[in-house]
Amino acid sequence: MLLDDHEMVRQGIELGLGKEADLKVVGSYGTSRDLLEALARRRVDVLVMDFILGPSDMDGLSLIRALSRRFKHCKPIVVTSHYTPATVSLALKAGSYGVLGKTQKLTELIAAIRTVAKGRVYLHPTMLSALQGMQPSSNGRMIESRMELPVTSQLNACLTPKEQEVLRCFLDGMSVGSIAEKFSRSASTISTQKQSAYRKLGIKTDSELFKFTHQFGEPE
Image (tube, rainbow, N blue to C red; front, side, top):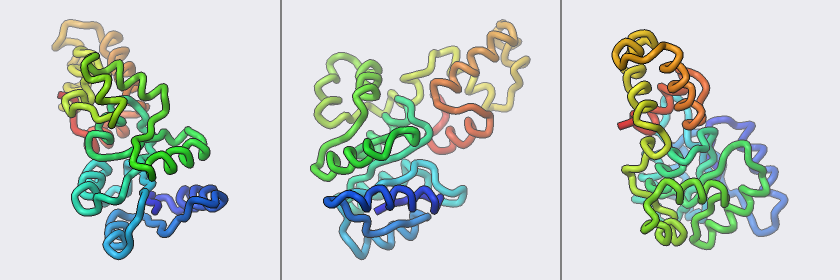
């Protein structure tokens, strides 16, 4: 099944998957409510889902957790524009079996579906290396076997302490100048740290930051 609030995206994926003899799309939905109702009626092996749905819909992490509780046979693959180690870590911990960026090719999604259908987690090797770098060496074997990551990694895994401070103050409504005064740094330094954090989180604008933190929780 497919879940994305953009119909054109769903149609494009469905057309691509329709060319594969071993894959069959049995449902395509724009809301989590429609999806959950469909899953109650029909067993599905793999769900390809967007991470950020419509503004009034359930957030991606909550949906993955709900699927893990109610439909254990359904294995979610997340396709997201926020393709960073932090968001991948969160999705895997919630119960996703794979995470891909929206800039990746359809052939990689097809490979992910086939892998996940066998009960294995799928990640691009580059992302796996990034996740392994976030974890203590003692966790290496666990990442390779199921790729589950401690929830404590979350956003702190990729942001420096100063970047976390800047974003936290910004989310509290402080301006760049106020943050600079608070930490006795120059405004240009604060601005640079903010933009560095944005790059690591895969976002570009202030509105994307607020949407991001609403989905995944603020940096701790």
